[in-house]
Amino acid sequence: MKYGKEEKTYSGITTKKLKNGETAIMVRFKYLGKTYPLKNFTKLFNCTTEKQAFDKLNQEVKKLLTDGKDPFNTQTKNLDYYFYERYDLMIKAKKWREDTTANNYLKFYKKYITKPLGWKKLSKIKYTDLSDILKSISHTSGTQHNQLKKILNPIYKEALRRGEVDTNPASLLE
Image (tube, rainbow, N blue to C red; front, side, top):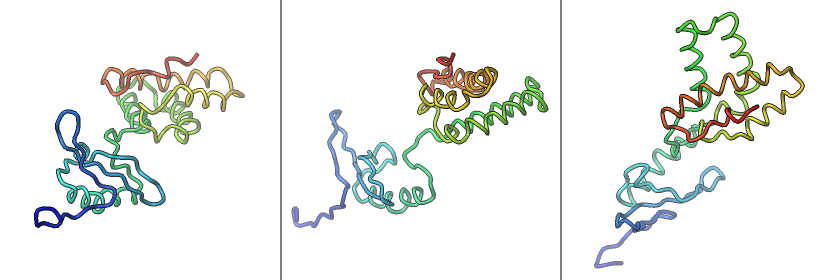
């Protein structure tokens, strides 16, 4: 009891004074068998009190996690999004013929890239991920290896221009 008022404490939710003088509501919790690291709910969700953070956690964040969505991800666009956006753009601009180039790229993408990388954000894809794909298709011809670079390189170049990524792992491919 503090000054005649009873303060309610919330498990895993704390108020922290930052170096710049601001206060932040920090939350650490366990849900569906996974422990989530300390998250700044003031920065992520504009929570200014522990009660607001508690309500946000239980009413929205846990619901999103149950639905399979990541509420802490600020960039929701993944490689699939960028590939299909580029695919549509190239067909509309008539730079790829739908019955040849576009069809070949789409088949290659679905067969080799979608499952291992399609769900990842561009910034999370590393050279080792691309190298693993090349190893998995080592039994195929060299044109298949080039196709990986032809598909990913323009996507990364555009992302570099937009400032969404710092490096282009596709440019490192031989």
